[in-house]
Length: 278
Image (cartoon, rainbow, N blue to C red; front, side, top):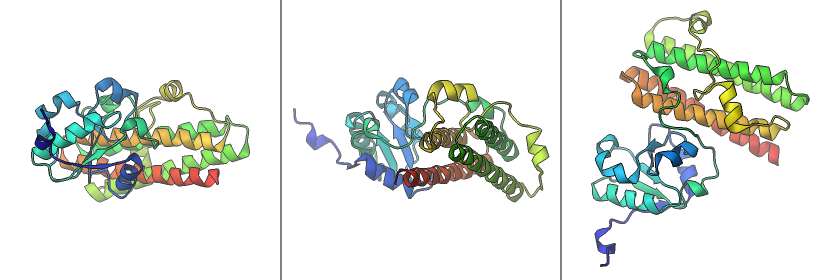
């Protein structure tokens, strides 16, 4: 039987086009749908992607926002094409299939399962709690960069670690400003630092876990930037996953705002990498 007449055509883009498309969007303006299996997702995925394996897609369509574009990918493009056709046939208006899939994705990636790191946000029932956790994660990464600055031998590497540390300080400042703007309550660093989660960095992993998973080297500026990009991609992914679990709208918006800042930081690191390679 020829099945072609029963399949709804959908738009396809390659991974370069997908990356450019996402670069122009805020993190909550498009749904990224990963239709692979959980083990594939854990090994690596596009930051912020929602895992919905193809065999379970029809059972979970109600979770997908019909008002936003949906970008669908799998390993190489076959499963995502079928998922895109199913969604289009069910009335989703703006579906984009990523041809080539994650196998062709050469940009930053997150890893581990959907629940990794979310325990940090357990019991987060208010925007105050959510921002306190986020502040703690930024502080953990700042301390990590400061520690690494004392371990490397080359001046360019040391200066870069110091630069990355100061970026985290600016992120902390924005979280404090965000807290005041959303709650109308002034807050000091001491208040947030008293609630700090020990030894946890952005993305929800400890220093040891990052070292074991990424096995990073710190000998060159490029390797340091690559390490920073890996951590920021994981942070972006965690904040987006946590926003989906937020128990109130204010907390959700706060985490999405932080995720957008992580995305901007990731883009800045990408430009810095380009500069070092020219």
